[in-house]
Length: 146
Image (cartoon, rainbow, N blue to C red; front, side, top):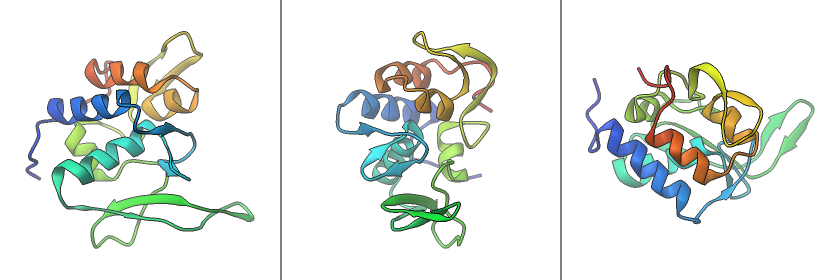
């Protein structure tokens, strides 16, 4: 089992504060693309900033279908050839105590008046504000955590 500098509760609070800070521009579909972040991309950034190691961030072109998307950031475990531009690496999942790589919880629910969603990624991509997503990091829906 990996030992972290922060408990999962502290880690989720670090992410919630970053979401509320105004330092990040919200994007969707990717952890980070052209300096626009999904809430899960901010979780990766906070892991890099506060846990000092174990996660690598790369950039460049990412292929989607027949075209390439520029400036898509990918995150992965140091030394691991598999990186993701859409889902949490396993060490960030463990740090947050999340059960699934996209932050899925048990039952679909409306967050801040939007359509029903059942994951952090879908909530972000539905356009729910970072401030409202921060509430979910502080008060995790049933089934989000291990």
